[in-house]
Length: 112
Length: 113
Image 1 (cartoon, each protein chain N blue to C red):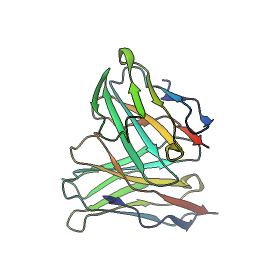
Image 2: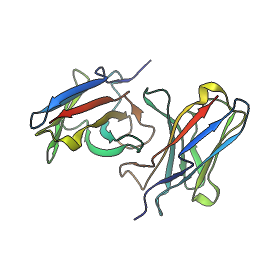
Image 3: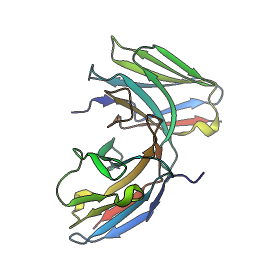
């Protein structure tokens, strides 16, 4: 069974540019989550999809962040325009029901 | 305001000995607790969980203890092995589910040969 895959693994962009992160969850998993870890601190919840619907996006920092999950399959997280404080590792996770979350390897975003 | 705290950024343990990782929380509404393990350049991997109706859960070399009155949980690894060297995250939620997990900052465990 393929795990959660994230692309790209690394991204370096300049302040003001746009970046789009992609996550492919495990096939059949209805729940998809985005988390972020900034500078070795705690992992923080960003948002939760159930299929194609946003269940909770209370963790999204501001309106520069936009997440979508078209068709309830893969998800994208767009940051536009990027700011320096957006740097960190963005993790995607998926689950089915209340089974434990399966995480991808993350996308390390560096904004310069 | 951190609701889940892992006060030890790192811990070094001799191979074969017991590793004890600690986690404290402030929200008395948390009823589900998990430990995840993370290797460099990888995502966290689920290790073990416990619900608030229990005070102990065991899975092979890994045991999690929950002390609700002290709002404290710990992960015991015995015996510790070199492959256990990783960052360990404690996480908690209010709804006995994965919904909106609140995470600690992690503890880096180093197993010395």
